[in-house]
Image 1 (cartoon, rainbow, N blue to C red):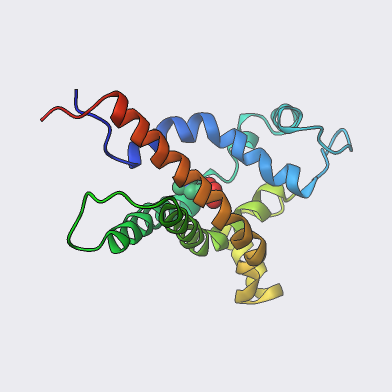
Image 2 (image 1 turned 90 degrees about the vertical axis):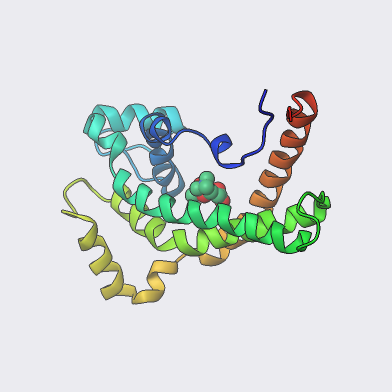
Length: 196
Ligand SMILES: CC(=O)O[C@H](CC(=O)[O-])C[N+](C)(C)C
């Protein structure tokens, strides 16, 4: 039995994330903005209602609209997320003891900072994605049109709209997430010890 060591696979398989989770995550901007359904002229009751209405009005394409932007947002930022987390842990452990256990506060700090690094990179693509997904169907031909419009109307700062709210959420959410992750890893490694 190899034991449980690596952090990345726990975050899931990318293919299933795109196929299964993308429609779920794609309903979020609609719910947050409370964009109204075109035909029913009503706000959505929840994620399921939103997904059903989108499917009815726009078909399967409606559920996957903005997938490219989601990938542009998540692929590089996820790399930075795990890299910054591991880098901070290594720095806090110091050179001498690579296997030294970190304190909970150190894990919280590394996780929180990793979440902030993730969003520092992800916000511009997230802003474009939300605008693109919630716009009326034929408003934008492609992503570049959304980018042009944001830059023209708000300048480069427009790409960082929501920065403060994103950062205020990113630290505690990811600090807790990594603490839970490390606690689960310790438990699993205790349950299934590594054979040497
Ligand atoms: C966009 C997103 O979900 O970011 C995650 C961190 C967070 O604050 O939710 C990180 N990751 C994309 C790696 C799941």
